[in-house]
Image (cartoon, rainbow, N blue to C red; front, side, top):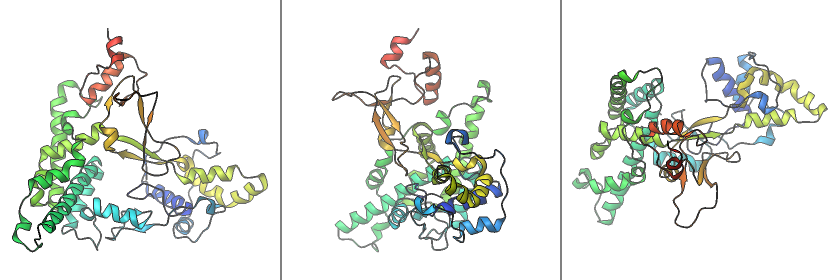
Length: 381
């Protein structure tokens, strides 16, 4: 369980282990995994060992305390203001920021102000079953609508008009453009035009494939419109805009990995002096065996960072978009790979730049361009 706004792990080590085991029993993958138990240095069985449900519940509800878990304190769980039981936070400030930025329009809780929660649940179900990139697109639209409403309220207040005035329902395109501005820098090709052709799709079937992708986006958009449509923000709900938003994530996303405290906890137990380790493992080993190699799985997803997303590609970049191990939240860094001169453009590589020229060009074709950086000019046949 991570904070829905900053992606810090929250609750407790016991809660994290309990939830992972609970989802494991349900056959649900909580997060995409990376890393292996061999690299981590813990001796775990490759086959998972089942545990009684009451033991898992004891971990989740705080009934069971694991040895030395106090050394891995995590922020307390703060529930969603709308009581949706889907979004949880590490602090009240994160909960309020998420509510104000996105979630107040996308919350399906009983205390939510969303008028059509059933439609919203249909949209979310469709996204989970097809492509969760639609959730990201919905957040962009929600963010823009909420920002537009704040800008309009401020605009009316400055003019000394009340919200009850008839002009409150009028359409203000300049304010909508201003609300859209933080997103506009990442606005890219439409999703069905820029998505890479899967290996199992023949080039002769490309037109049909892209039409299917477009139809999928259309279906998603209709569900979203039914849920949160705002007439004053109608341009945001056009299929063309929706396709561009999804394309933005398709081309400019950055993989984001937040290390799990569960791995750190079991490594800590493994490094204890022999007598303490044996005593602790009487309690911890059954849970480690039940997790199997899943004990080291981090929280892994995708993110859009406006600064990073505006950086151009080079096969000989001077910087790198980087997720440091010490970053325990959703932050990422841009680090210099060499000295950068004043006035020099900061570039990153969208691909593995160590590949040969032809392979690099083939990979970059998925981004819709042919690279003409100094290195490619020098290496081209």
